[in-house]
Image 1: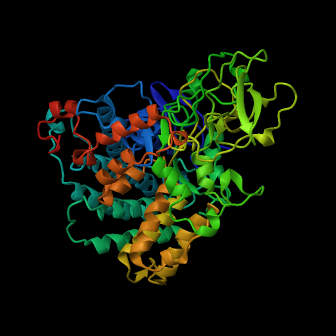
Image 2: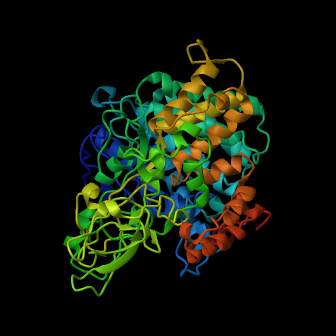
Image 3: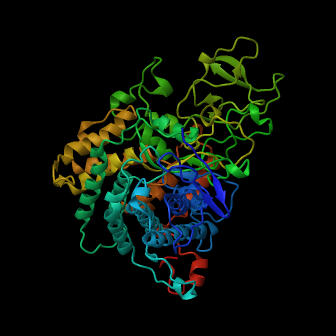
Length: 632
């Protein structure tokens, strides 16, 4: 179980106990200035918590970056059709949109904290015998984070100011820094991380709120893949092949370390995040943005909206929250029909899709991708109001031409509410279902797996109380963590990079890697965990393998703020977004036109300029050396 502690000293938010056992906070720790402050390990830890603080802000992984900026892609859309604001996830944003400025500002605050911390550590005079880990290791974490923040900026904005040193004075001229070309920023990022990767503590995988050596190796693979992007200019001294080779070799370092495995249960990876637990058996979740509490008191402050803004919608007029089966959630993000097809049709073998009439034939198919069941469930928690004397909503339907009736008792408590169309339900078992006259048989339910498949909530992080293990009122902030890097991502990055490079690879010890076999094994491990078969023909040529890996990334990593940048680096972002907007099932039972029309209008907004965010207007007002991105 995680341990999360807060100690306050003046205005500084502090960590309580040893970092190897505890987490960094999701509040905004302030950096103690240099000039001799860092005299012992406790102070080193306090300062480092401040460098991590940006990750756990609402502007980054708590909401703005992870959801609004990065989570609207061809597989996920913002579904609040009553909202008319300018928002990045509606692609109607401008350079003045506050979410964009707040995210930009928070990233540069993280960089500022890292620079000041590094300057302080450089001046520190501490006996190595008094440290549980070396000064070099503390500095390595800060340098890694500084590089990672720059990567997020370059990935989202393109050319950005590179700030690799602390400001020497509060002189306003210090903010006048021109943008460095995107390719140069990315190259600086990998150089920085490669310079410190061996100084990072390899033994902190028990606490994925911290950066370990394998995390750095996995992030190196991610950056090198983005450097090979169709939208990134040439990098001096590195060809596209070199970058794919580097990505594959760094990802392979994680694989061969043996420190991480796939959890046999896909859903358990996210249940752990919902339950506030670390996976100490498999360490699949390698790096997480950590969130502390639900803001019910000063010592439970948090900045995370995961499960609230994205999750299974759970709303009711019933204010007796102890009766709810799911804590309050707006459920503002839905999976698209394109995602549904990826799970249900694309890259599926005929034997998996054969119709069969038996108990194993769950949801109308013999074999279902387990990730679809978790990520796009057939229910949410909207609840019903009805006029039946029992307090529920009476429903009618036919079985073999015979009229049937029943009652959904969902006015007192927030039971699972199935997606339905004309009393055709999207799930077999419905909680709260009772018969009117003692003759109702739930086995008689009409069952259709595809009902409302284009509008289902993104269920990856749901606030069901069986998982969250707490009942709360309308608290919009949660303890649910957000994954920054998972081992399944590393496997898929290795498979992709090895396939694109398509040449000899070696590990860091100079040993040859059977790259083709290893790439197949990495991809198959992810698919086998999902419980689906693979057509071996898709593994035998570069183009087929490429398409399979790209689709697999969508199925495995949906809603994790990665897909948008995958589409951008593959050079297909605008086309795929437009396709998602027009890919709407024809039959009404598959959709709700209010949602799908709203989604279509959002996708129609997307153009080439959305490959990058605009430089915030407020930043241009103070940094006159910057110019706006060309298409903005």
